[in-house]
Image (cartoon, rainbow, N blue to C red; front, side, top):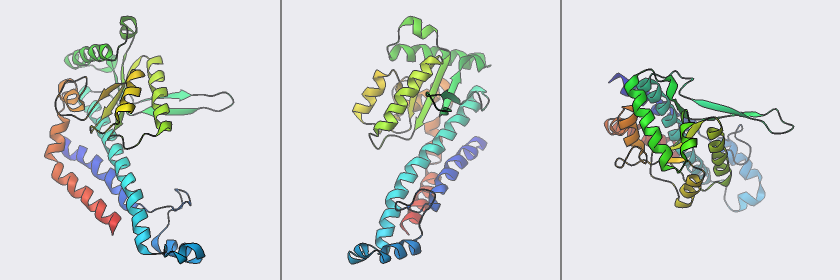
Length: 264
């Protein structure tokens, strides 16, 4: 299938970035350290050399630990790009229509542009059945997050934050997500947290729910207002779970190659 190969390349390319990962050891992300440089630095530091921390095993441990974080990040990035392409292909949206950003300006600053990972603007969907499916789903989604009728009627669509899952309770990230939700509503969009896995701490999900995020989890059962894969199948008309099942062997091989590279 042509779409499968195109979509699979997005995942492959994201994962292969991890093969170039090298730890920074406090020298900044722009100054990644090779094994040789690491050993030179640690051997010249009397304290570290006394403890034997100039060992290649220490370097390998740092590389594996940081590399694992990179793997999760790149899986998330690859799936973000995949989802954006699904929105475009399934709903006939342009790249600009399928993404969303807004400007945040604080007093005394030039401001910055923040973006979310996907968007469904109802008025940009030209296919009538697809637009009807999305509109009906949006009405149900709005009701499920507890918005009043007046707020529900004023929304023009939804925006998505795509994550492979949550592995930490990073307060800074949470605060940014709550702020994103407020700005999404200000721009007449429902904020949707689209998770590819079921990995999210209960307390974090509850906080997002209080901010009126709709949370789609990576379950293969359920409904289109609580499951990422049911939403993709029934609303977007694309079987994302089927894509992952069909291509699991290829994705596993790519991931294994990354792990072997990080541990080598």
